[in-house]
Image: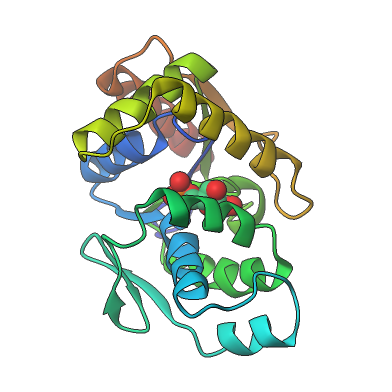
Amino acid sequence: MGSRKPVIAIDGPAGAGKTTVARRLAERLGYTLVETGTMYRAVAFGLVRDRVPQRDGPELRKYLEPLDVSLAGGRVYLNGEDVTGAIRTHEIAEATSRATTLAAVREKVTPLQRRAAAGGGVVLEGRDTGTVVCPDAQVKFYLTASLGTRAGRRHAELAARGVRASLDRVREDVRARDVQDETRELAPLKRAPDAIELDTSDLTVDEVVERMLTAIATRCSTRS
Ligand code: DC
């Protein structure tokens, strides 16, 4: 495998536990975490705030061209502005799901994600990291969980942040995002053929992370 540290790709639907697990895994490995959805959220935030029409065309491409999205120290910056807090709203989640169906947006963001992974020693977390962003990632995981489990987790996450929403509403949001993410034409959410699938419904975060560490050790030792 040479001296470059591996790239670990983690994909799966909303609420499968990717973010928590990816963060913990990156800590355990001493790797950099790249939450690819955060980069899309930052772009969507810019589109909403600057009232840019969310459809492919010259206006959108002109807006995107000079845009810079960067991750540093757990924060996300849009043209140098810290937008970490502003991107975690229901409105931006919806706008992001729409924006990620646009070719211009994916063409802008995918190379930034590849660049972030180029040096290795990275945990990439998202929807298409093992299929589109880094198809040559050394280890790929596809995390899943039942709809009920995923909605329950999202609901608890929102409550912890002081956002009130009924469980039914959250379940419908999660279901709607699944449909949008799985059926979009570009980079739809799907498991890479060589990804290791893990159903996290009945596993603790520690159990998931331990299984992943074992799989990484096995795959990387057999490929070196
Ligand atoms: O993981 P998240 O909730 O921050 O992702 C926000 C949105 O971006 C969600 O609708 C899925 C989409 N996304 C994507 O299309 N491709 C990625 N690599 C990551 C996220």
